[in-house]
Image (cartoon, each protein chain N blue to C red):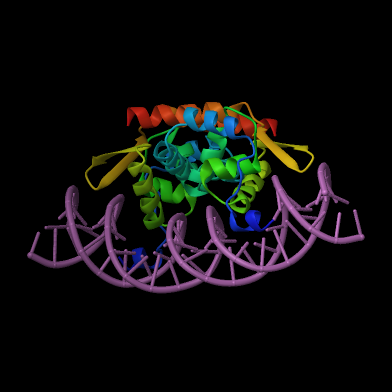
Length: 119
Length: 119
DNA sequence: TAAACATATGAGCAACTGTTCAAATGAAAG
DNA sequence: CTTTCATTTGAACAGTTGCTCATATGTTTA
Protein backbone atom coordinates (compact mmCIF):
# COMPACT_ATOMS: atom_id res chain seq x y z
CA UNK A 1 0.00 0.00 0.00
CA UNK A 2 2.76 2.39 0.97
CA UNK A 3 4.72 1.02 -1.96
CA UNK A 4 1.72 1.60 -4.15
CA UNK A 5 1.36 5.18 -3.07
CA UNK A 6 4.96 6.05 -3.88
CA UNK A 7 4.67 4.79 -7.42
CA UNK A 8 1.77 6.79 -8.65
CA UNK A 9 2.53 6.05 -12.29
CA UNK A 10 -0.36 4.17 -13.83
CA UNK A 11 0.10 0.46 -14.34
CA UNK A 12 -0.50 -0.90 -17.80
CA UNK A 13 -3.61 -2.99 -17.84
CA UNK A 14 -2.89 -5.03 -20.97
CA UNK A 15 0.83 -4.54 -21.59
CA UNK A 16 1.19 -6.87 -24.55
CA UNK A 17 -1.75 -5.38 -26.38
CA UNK A 18 -0.50 -1.86 -25.81
CA UNK A 19 2.95 -2.78 -27.10
CA UNK A 20 1.54 -4.40 -30.20
CA UNK A 21 -0.66 -1.44 -31.07
CA UNK A 22 2.18 0.98 -30.35
CA UNK A 23 4.27 -0.75 -32.99
CA UNK A 24 1.48 -0.78 -35.58
CA UNK A 25 0.42 2.83 -35.23
CA UNK A 26 1.73 5.57 -37.53
CA UNK A 27 4.05 8.14 -35.98
CA UNK A 28 2.43 10.81 -33.83
CA UNK A 29 3.62 13.49 -36.22
CA UNK A 30 1.87 11.86 -39.15
CA UNK A 31 -1.36 11.58 -37.20
CA UNK A 32 -1.01 15.21 -36.13
CA UNK A 33 -0.66 16.27 -39.75
CA UNK A 34 -3.73 14.22 -40.61
CA UNK A 35 -5.67 15.93 -37.83
CA UNK A 36 -4.56 19.30 -39.20
CA UNK A 37 -5.99 18.34 -42.57
CA UNK A 38 -9.37 17.36 -41.15
CA UNK A 39 -9.43 20.50 -39.05
CA UNK A 40 -9.72 22.39 -42.33
CA UNK A 41 -12.88 20.43 -43.16
CA UNK A 42 -14.18 21.08 -39.65
CA UNK A 43 -15.65 24.51 -40.21
CA UNK A 44 -19.05 25.16 -41.77
CA UNK A 45 -17.89 28.15 -43.80
CA UNK A 46 -15.01 26.23 -45.33
CA UNK A 47 -17.26 23.25 -45.92
CA UNK A 48 -19.75 25.45 -47.79
CA UNK A 49 -16.94 26.87 -49.89
CA UNK A 50 -15.69 23.40 -50.79
CA UNK A 51 -19.21 22.25 -51.57
CA UNK A 52 -19.80 25.24 -53.86
CA UNK A 53 -16.49 24.77 -55.66
CA UNK A 54 -17.27 21.11 -56.26
CA UNK A 55 -19.87 22.29 -58.78
CA UNK A 56 -18.23 25.29 -60.34
CA UNK A 57 -15.17 27.50 -60.35
CA UNK A 58 -16.08 30.72 -58.51
CA UNK A 59 -14.50 34.07 -57.74
CA UNK A 60 -14.28 35.58 -54.26
CA UNK A 61 -17.16 37.95 -54.87
CA UNK A 62 -19.43 35.14 -56.07
CA UNK A 63 -18.60 33.12 -53.00
CA UNK A 64 -19.24 36.04 -50.68
CA UNK A 65 -22.70 36.57 -52.20
CA UNK A 66 -23.45 32.85 -52.19
CA UNK A 67 -22.50 32.47 -48.53
CA UNK A 68 -23.86 35.83 -47.39
CA UNK A 69 -20.52 36.85 -45.92
CA UNK A 70 -18.01 39.62 -46.45
CA UNK A 71 -15.35 39.09 -49.11
CA UNK A 72 -12.80 39.52 -46.35
CA UNK A 73 -14.11 36.61 -44.33
CA UNK A 74 -14.23 34.43 -47.45
CA UNK A 75 -10.72 35.42 -48.44
CA UNK A 76 -9.38 34.48 -45.02
CA UNK A 77 -10.90 31.03 -45.31
CA UNK A 78 -9.69 30.62 -48.88
CA UNK A 79 -6.20 31.25 -47.61
CA UNK A 80 -6.61 28.39 -45.15
CA UNK A 81 -7.96 26.13 -47.90
CA UNK A 82 -5.08 27.06 -50.15
CA UNK A 83 -2.64 26.28 -47.35
CA UNK A 84 -4.10 22.80 -47.13
CA UNK A 85 -3.84 22.43 -50.92
CA UNK A 86 -7.54 21.77 -51.20
CA UNK A 87 -8.17 24.76 -53.43
CA UNK A 88 -6.36 26.39 -56.32
CA UNK A 89 -6.39 30.04 -57.45
CA UNK A 90 -6.48 31.34 -61.03
CA UNK A 91 -6.11 35.05 -61.56
CA UNK A 92 -7.81 36.89 -64.43
CA UNK A 93 -7.33 40.66 -64.22
CA UNK A 94 -8.60 41.81 -60.85
CA UNK A 95 -10.67 38.71 -60.39
CA UNK A 96 -9.36 35.56 -58.70
CA UNK A 97 -11.16 32.33 -59.52
CA UNK A 98 -10.98 29.44 -57.09
CA UNK A 99 -11.54 25.76 -57.78
CA UNK A 100 -10.93 22.45 -56.05
CA UNK A 101 -7.31 21.34 -56.23
CA UNK A 102 -7.74 17.80 -55.00
CA UNK A 103 -9.57 14.78 -56.25
CA UNK A 104 -9.92 13.49 -52.69
CA UNK A 105 -12.04 16.39 -51.47
CA UNK A 106 -15.23 15.03 -52.99
CA UNK A 107 -14.43 11.54 -51.77
CA UNK A 108 -13.93 12.71 -48.20
CA UNK A 109 -17.15 14.71 -48.27
CA UNK A 110 -19.04 11.77 -49.74
CA UNK A 111 -17.93 9.37 -47.02
CA UNK A 112 -18.82 11.89 -44.36
CA UNK A 113 -22.30 12.18 -45.86
CA UNK A 114 -22.64 8.40 -45.79
CA UNK A 115 -21.76 8.31 -42.11
CA UNK A 116 -24.40 10.91 -41.33
CA UNK A 117 -27.04 9.18 -43.43
CA UNK A 118 -26.57 5.97 -41.45
CA UNK A 119 -26.29 7.54 -38.01
CA UNK B 1 -21.18 58.05 -57.81
CA UNK B 2 -23.53 59.26 -55.12
CA UNK B 3 -25.94 56.56 -56.20
CA UNK B 4 -23.14 54.03 -55.96
CA UNK B 5 -22.14 55.11 -52.47
CA UNK B 6 -25.63 54.78 -51.07
CA UNK B 7 -25.99 51.22 -52.27
CA UNK B 8 -23.02 49.63 -50.65
CA UNK B 9 -24.35 46.11 -51.02
CA UNK B 10 -22.00 44.06 -53.14
CA UNK B 11 -23.06 43.42 -56.71
CA UNK B 12 -23.10 39.85 -57.90
CA UNK B 13 -20.32 39.28 -60.36
CA UNK B 14 -21.70 36.19 -62.09
CA UNK B 15 -25.37 36.07 -61.12
CA UNK B 16 -26.39 33.08 -63.21
CA UNK B 17 -23.50 30.96 -61.98
CA UNK B 18 -24.23 31.83 -58.36
CA UNK B 19 -27.90 30.95 -58.77
CA UNK B 20 -27.08 27.63 -60.37
CA UNK B 21 -24.64 26.62 -57.65
CA UNK B 22 -27.03 27.81 -54.95
CA UNK B 23 -29.64 25.36 -56.24
CA UNK B 24 -27.20 22.45 -56.45
CA UNK B 25 -25.66 22.84 -53.02
CA UNK B 26 -26.86 20.86 -49.99
CA UNK B 27 -28.63 22.81 -47.26
CA UNK B 28 -26.44 24.86 -44.95
CA UNK B 29 -27.54 22.76 -42.00
CA UNK B 30 -26.38 19.55 -43.63
CA UNK B 31 -23.00 21.07 -44.44
CA UNK B 32 -22.74 22.36 -40.88
CA UNK B 33 -23.39 18.86 -39.54
CA UNK B 34 -20.75 17.52 -41.89
CA UNK B 35 -18.28 20.11 -40.60
CA UNK B 36 -19.10 19.07 -37.04
CA UNK B 37 -18.23 15.50 -37.95
CA UNK B 38 -14.86 16.42 -39.43
CA UNK B 39 -14.15 18.64 -36.45
CA UNK B 40 -14.02 15.45 -34.42
CA UNK B 41 -11.27 14.12 -36.69
CA UNK B 42 -9.46 17.45 -36.44
CA UNK B 43 -7.65 16.89 -33.17
CA UNK B 44 -4.41 14.94 -32.84
CA UNK B 45 -5.41 13.23 -29.61
CA UNK B 46 -8.68 11.97 -31.05
CA UNK B 47 -6.92 10.96 -34.25
CA UNK B 48 -4.42 8.91 -32.26
CA UNK B 49 -7.26 7.24 -30.39
CA UNK B 50 -9.04 6.35 -33.62
CA UNK B 51 -5.82 5.07 -35.12
CA UNK B 52 -5.14 2.87 -32.10
CA UNK B 53 -8.67 1.50 -32.06
CA UNK B 54 -8.44 0.63 -35.74
CA UNK B 55 -6.05 -2.15 -34.73
CA UNK B 56 -7.46 -3.33 -31.46
CA UNK B 57 -10.19 -2.86 -28.91
CA UNK B 58 -8.68 -1.00 -25.94
CA UNK B 59 -9.73 0.12 -22.48
CA UNK B 60 -9.32 3.66 -21.17
CA UNK B 61 -6.26 2.79 -19.13
CA UNK B 62 -4.52 1.18 -22.10
CA UNK B 63 -5.22 4.25 -24.18
CA UNK B 64 -3.94 6.59 -21.50
CA UNK B 65 -0.65 4.66 -21.30
CA UNK B 66 -0.39 4.39 -25.07
CA UNK B 67 -0.93 8.13 -25.56
CA UNK B 68 0.97 9.23 -22.47
CA UNK B 69 -2.01 11.18 -21.16
CA UNK B 70 -4.19 11.10 -18.07
CA UNK B 71 -7.20 8.79 -18.13
CA UNK B 72 -9.33 11.86 -17.56
CA UNK B 73 -8.15 13.57 -20.72
CA UNK B 74 -8.67 10.37 -22.69
CA UNK B 75 -12.14 9.88 -21.24
CA UNK B 76 -13.16 13.38 -22.22
CA UNK B 77 -12.12 12.75 -25.81
CA UNK B 78 -13.80 9.35 -25.86
CA UNK B 79 -17.01 11.10 -24.90
CA UNK B 80 -16.66 13.34 -27.93
CA UNK B 81 -15.96 10.35 -30.15
CA UNK B 82 -18.96 8.51 -28.74
CA UNK B 83 -21.11 11.57 -29.41
CA UNK B 84 -20.08 11.45 -33.05
CA UNK B 85 -20.84 7.70 -33.14
CA UNK B 86 -17.31 6.93 -34.23
CA UNK B 87 -16.60 4.76 -31.19
CA UNK B 88 -18.52 2.20 -29.17
CA UNK B 89 -18.17 1.26 -25.50
CA UNK B 90 -18.35 -2.23 -24.02
CA UNK B 91 -18.33 -2.55 -20.26
CA UNK B 92 -16.75 -5.53 -18.48
CA UNK B 93 -16.71 -5.08 -14.73
CA UNK B 94 -14.93 -1.84 -13.92
CA UNK B 95 -13.23 -1.79 -17.27
CA UNK B 96 -14.72 -0.11 -20.34
CA UNK B 97 -13.45 -1.29 -23.70
CA UNK B 98 -13.69 0.99 -26.69
CA UNK B 99 -13.69 0.07 -30.35
CA UNK B 100 -14.49 1.73 -33.67
CA UNK B 101 -18.21 1.97 -34.30
CA UNK B 102 -18.07 2.94 -37.93
CA UNK B 103 -16.81 1.31 -41.07
CA UNK B 104 -16.21 4.74 -42.60
CA UNK B 105 -13.61 5.81 -40.07
CA UNK B 106 -10.84 3.83 -41.70
CA UNK B 107 -11.93 4.98 -45.15
CA UNK B 108 -11.83 8.63 -44.15
CA UNK B 109 -8.40 8.25 -42.56
CA UNK B 110 -7.10 6.39 -45.61
CA UNK B 111 -8.18 9.12 -48.03
CA UNK B 112 -6.65 11.78 -45.80
CA UNK B 113 -3.38 9.84 -45.83
CA UNK B 114 -3.52 9.69 -49.63
CA UNK B 115 -3.94 13.43 -49.86
CA UNK B 116 -0.91 14.00 -47.64
CA UNK B 117 1.20 11.48 -49.54
CA UNK B 118 0.59 13.36 -52.79
CA UNK B 119 0.93 16.89 -51.43
C1' DT C 1 -19.29 -2.90 5.67
C1' DA C 2 -15.00 -0.31 3.84
C1' DA C 3 -11.20 0.21 0.71
C1' DA C 4 -9.24 0.14 -3.85
C1' DC C 5 -9.82 0.82 -8.47
C1' DA C 6 -11.44 2.18 -13.47
C1' DT C 7 -13.85 5.48 -15.44
C1' DA C 8 -16.66 9.62 -15.84
C1' DT C 9 -17.77 14.41 -15.01
C1' DG C 10 -17.74 19.53 -13.95
C1' DA C 11 -15.35 23.79 -13.29
C1' DG C 12 -11.63 26.65 -14.53
C1' DC C 13 -8.08 28.32 -17.42
C1' DA C 14 -4.77 28.97 -21.25
C1' DA C 15 -4.55 28.50 -26.11
C1' DC C 16 -6.68 28.67 -30.42
C1' DT C 17 -10.12 30.18 -34.11
C1' DG C 18 -13.39 32.85 -37.10
C1' DT C 19 -15.23 37.15 -37.85
C1' DT C 20 -15.10 42.21 -38.22
C1' DC C 21 -12.94 46.40 -39.28
C1' DA C 22 -9.53 49.26 -41.32
C1' DA C 23 -6.00 49.53 -44.37
C1' DA C 24 -2.97 47.81 -48.15
C1' DT C 25 -2.19 45.56 -52.81
C1' DG C 26 -2.59 45.27 -57.44
C1' DA C 27 -5.03 45.71 -61.80
C1' DA C 28 -8.20 47.98 -65.10
C1' DA C 29 -10.52 52.18 -66.69
C1' DG C 30 -11.22 57.20 -67.04
C1' DC D 1 -1.79 59.96 -62.92
C1' DT D 2 -6.02 59.22 -60.39
C1' DT D 3 -9.98 56.63 -59.39
C1' DT D 4 -12.37 52.47 -58.89
C1' DC D 5 -12.71 47.90 -57.96
C1' DA D 6 -11.56 42.85 -56.42
C1' DT D 7 -8.95 40.84 -53.32
C1' DT D 8 -5.75 40.41 -49.53
C1' DT D 9 -3.87 41.27 -45.06
C1' DG D 10 -3.20 42.41 -39.99
C1' DA D 11 -4.95 43.51 -35.54
C1' DA D 12 -8.39 42.89 -32.19
C1' DC D 13 -12.15 40.74 -30.00
C1' DA D 14 -15.57 37.13 -28.77
C1' DG D 15 -16.44 32.44 -28.74
C1' DT D 16 -14.69 27.78 -28.59
C1' DT D 17 -11.69 23.95 -27.21
C1' DG D 18 -8.61 20.59 -24.72
C1' DC D 19 -6.30 19.85 -20.72
C1' DT D 20 -5.85 19.72 -15.48
C1' DC D 21 -7.56 19.11 -11.10
C1' DA D 22 -10.84 17.67 -7.87
C1' DT D 23 -14.66 15.04 -7.24
C1' DA D 24 -18.31 11.67 -8.25
C1' DT D 25 -19.95 6.90 -10.03
C1' DG D 26 -20.04 2.43 -10.07
C1' DT D 27 -17.71 -2.09 -9.49
C1' DT D 28 -14.80 -5.46 -7.32
C1' DT D 29 -12.43 -7.27 -3.43
C1' DA D 30 -11.10 -7.62 1.46
